[in-house]
Length: 335
Image (cartoon, rainbow, N blue to C red; front, side, top):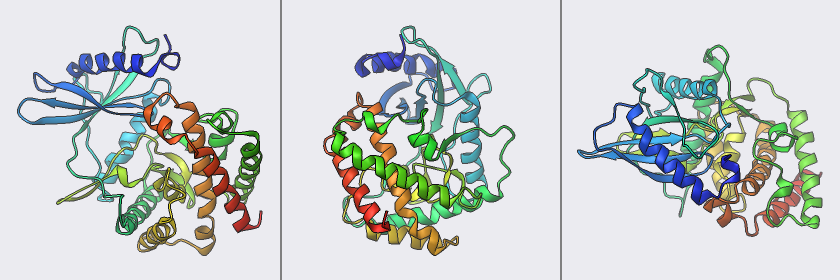
């Protein structure tokens, strides 16, 4: 059976079995076991064994990334760490010499790719109070990553997802059609149609010059920073791909775009960014467009992932807030 046709609870039961059965593909200590800690695009497991061993197993969603695309993700995070741009998690090579393993669960039609990462110590920055310091650091890290990709010689056949207008609004959109999301009434859809067209027009004018549109993390939120006494580590490169550099700020405020703290966080992020890399006034003014591009993508994501707990929790009122933010965006730019 296809995973997309299976209730989430049943799917996770099969993935749990796959996780346990697959540990032998790596040289993990005897007695190791895997425990689910997160499910989104992928299922993520904490692997533990007697004696204090820990690692993190990522079981990829079916038919989302190719083997080559995952290789390219690992190549970039390895280069960032090796060249001192930002500390990233290492990964284990399987017994067959490949860091990307393939596993099958009897009840699932498609095989799954899996990667076993080093366990990273640290806490994510507190998002309940003043987040300006964390966002200034996010801006600094983003700028360093952007500078890196402009000089980094990417491997031949480099393959990753693209996060542009077609990926969000096109007929083969990566996360589905926002129109299918919960609570998108005809009245809200009328506003959101105008928002989509405005975003597309603005992005067409903004263009895709390599110093604006290149390889990005695409999910650089505080939740993907881990901080301890040794510094800050950037994790979860699963969404990294081709996109506008400024999309990295929009991703940083995913799901909290209407938070009253956003103007201060944006100012902090830009300040951190400019401490490393130039950002023109024109680019800064266009940040609102990328916030709305990301927000529309998230609306679609909620609709296409509604069986998972997080989208269910986020869905109530999300479409209405998106339309309100979109109208305010159009009013601000005079669209």
